[in-house]
Length: 76
Image 1 (cartoon, rainbow, N blue to C red):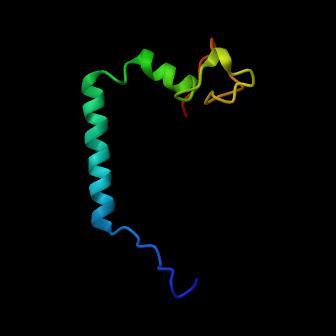
Image 2 (image 1 turned 180 degrees about the vertical axis):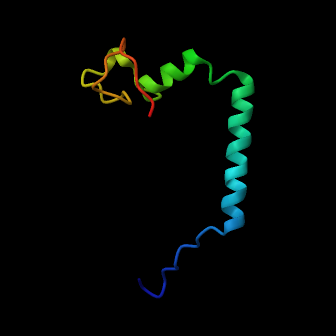
């Protein structure tokens, strides 16, 4: 590290807490809007956003590339 470079500033406990509370609010609002219906959750589990399953020959866009679309995914 040279004298011109500054050490990156870390977050304080209070800043991390505020980020956590904001994330909880956003998730709660999304849940109220219905973003987490069983159908939407299943779709989220099956692929990454912005990746079209029809145009993904290797299956890299899937969260579980080794699982076929008609198989159940076990949540541990």
